[in-house]
Length: 67
Image 1: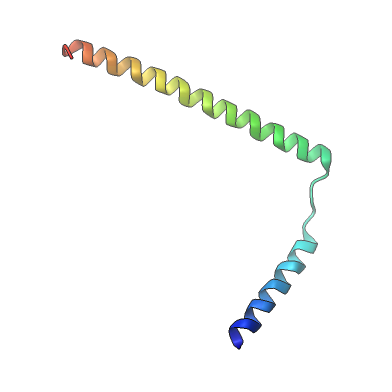
Image 2: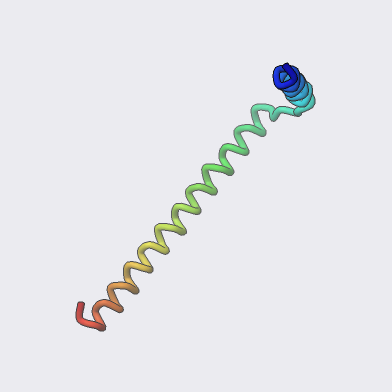
């Protein structure tokens, strides 16, 4: 029975905390989404460049050893 009581208290505390949250308005949400998209694109670009560079260096090393 105490587990059910504790679960109910947890849900009530969660609801109280959700009431305290300041939710972003539409312009803030659009700006944050744009920042996340740009960041993801930049990270993808960096990973792509690292992939090309590592492939180049591995090919050079394999060429030196005749493989």
